[in-house]
Image 1: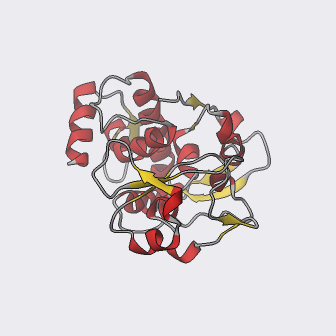
Image 2 (image 1 turned 90 degrees about the vertical axis):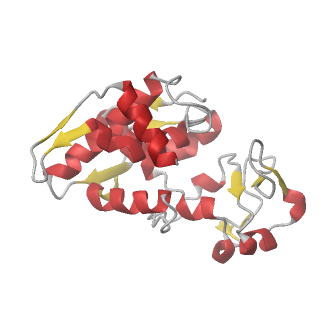
Length: 225
């Protein structure tokens, strides 16, 4: 796995801040996107960093519109996945081949991977990818600034960051197929497992806890089933 770098608040907001969203609202939407129940609504503006950062895009066999919109020559079987699952690579510049004049040429039929991608997950986990090709994404991540309508939002953010730090420090805990293979998967898994690191009543107060690794493993196995 490309080792993620954990960032401090100073590093996160060292440049001009961009409003990310209320954290609790964002978290609900992100969890739905992870479950395949919705799309991410990212205030990208003119940013296309995720499309120009040497990303491999997974496309499932049921994504017929996306598959019909992408030349087959750009697709190859996804390693370790069942037949029909493919990846789309990038050009010599690291750009998605479907990016034309700075915009997605198949936006209405774009793959699910693109519909659910949200670089704010790195800001939530306070981490980023060390791969130099992801530098533009990291620069964007460092500008995101969440707001908190209530103390639970602050606690939830701390729990996601704690989960990311735990996962980075316990790489061997989870079995293949569940263990994060890259920084993006680590940040997403931190969102999925963050409640293992949060303790408190419905109305608070809440506190961040250091759970037993077995508790985290059981939660990861249960939620991947």
